[in-house]
Amino acid sequence: MSDSLFLVIDQGGQSSRLLVFDAVGEQRLLLRESVETRYPGPGRVEQDPVEMVASIRTLLDQLPEQLGAELHKLKAAALVTQRSSLVCWDRQGGRPLSPVLSWQDTRAADLLAKLQLNDGEVAERTGLRPNAHYGASKLRWCLDTLPAVGEALAEQRLACGPLASYLLFALTREHHFAVDPGNAQRTLLLNLNSGQWDKTLLSQFGISQQILPPVQPSASEFGTLAVGDTSVPVQLLNGDQNAAFFGAGPLHGERVYINAGTGAFIAATWPEAQPAPPGLLKTLVYQSPKKRWFVAEGTVNGAASALERQAVELGVDDYQLHLDKWCRAATDIPLFLNGVGGLGAPYWRSDFSSRFMYFNQQSPESGMVAVLESIVFLLRVNFLRLSEMGGPFTEIVLSGGLSELHGFCQRLADLCGLPVFLNPEPEATARGAAYLLAGQPGGWQLREDFLYFSPEPNTELELRFKHWLLAMADATADTL
Image 1 (cartoon, rainbow, N blue to C red):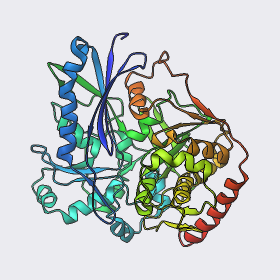
Image 2 (cartoon, one colour; image 1 turned 135 degrees about the vertical axis):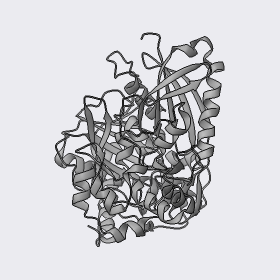
Image 3 (spheres, rainbow, N blue to C red; image 1 turned 90 degrees about the vertical axis):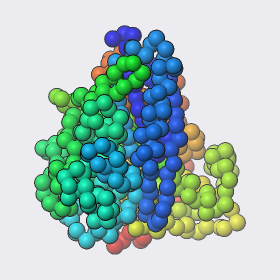
Image 4 (cartoon, rainbow, N blue to C red; image 1 turned 45 degrees about the vertical axis):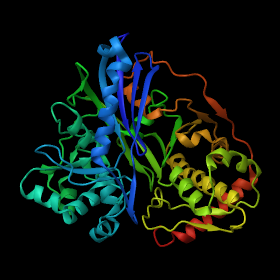
């Protein structure tokens, strides 16, 4: 075990990444292939499943040369992917019959609204709320709209499921057809109590269980990968955010975990028998054959994606290079009501229109700071919900791309009143997956160079947050 290596395939929105970790948690290798995201229409976000598989195979083909004689030390592999993304494919050969409908995709919002699902009943069954980001309504859209999907269904060769299931089927020697509970939950069709597909919700969406993959524990046997002249067993399947919560090692009850990238996700460990706080989700982040780990989770759909979109609209170039400076220097900062990608927890409104308030159009720099602050404000709202029913919390562990912005980190510490520890591991998802894949070893080395942001009084920020809360209450009055 001491000289074993662990392989992680991390398929994200912008790239496919392949990482190798050793038995004490040191990253030994990182390979990356870019993948394209398309935006063919309002609410539509797609990726090419063929390109995605090809990118991962390209990386796997590089492993023998990169690892040399150590290739045969690969003990096991993990596959982690974007949650809530969905694919339909032909089970008799693996040809994709739909694009990858991204987790950001909300094309089926009208279809979902017509079902008039009961929020409380759905939360009790799935831990989630009815939302077009999840897979069920997108799957129903594929069944209703794509001729190739309907034809495959009629001929009993249709397979549909989370992106993780499709990649597993396409990449493993056995074309293994399965899904883990974490990705299955994000379809809005998994019953948390039974751990299996929910027959009532399947009936409400008109989806046959026969086209969905069987559910296996996150840590179980998922087939094998051919890597050079060796076979590597896939022994972990999970969602990317679920794995990222383990990026700093074992979960601790006094910590709040935030991973802020394209979207931002905030979570705290949660008892299996206790419902999540109002407006938040109860997420099954990992399941072994003997135990299940849960968190209460809040989602902010528009994090880096909101900054990217508003930078384009405001005509701001290379904002990443300047945003920290603007955070220190900007005055007369407006408010930004952030519904980019749909307004997530705890408001839950897919059709929310983002807007600035009190914005001086001559100062795009202050507008970008307002967008950054809107992410912090949404996280604080979710943090307050967590604190009402959980905790007490003593610290925040932050990871993800936005953690590189010190203005973001300091504002988060100031508003939440807790120290923010910046996880220096840039690949938190992959490291969390490797930690789980290695069996959560007690001797796993955790890096000690955590950057620390101590909360400081910030009267102006608190005042903007109070004004932002009032503005959000007005803008969402018909949904709360």
